Length: 82
Image 1 (cartoon, helix red, strand yellow):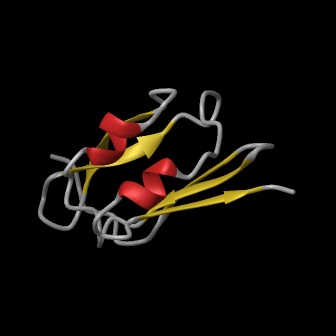
Image 2: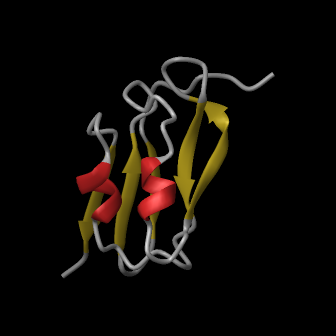
């Protein structure tokens, strides 16, 4: 059985940082649907309602921030490196 991780899950690359906050992610999947490079997938860990949360493949992520803008619960944070 998967467990709920209440701390943010952070994914780093040379391009930037992508983080999801499981205590906010309800597993709606809008970020997966809207990602232009399809780098966001379902995680084995659970979110706040016991639903799967999301995770990012930073090898594919272009750090565009669309997922952050589309998330209705502010559960994703994207920071592009300068």
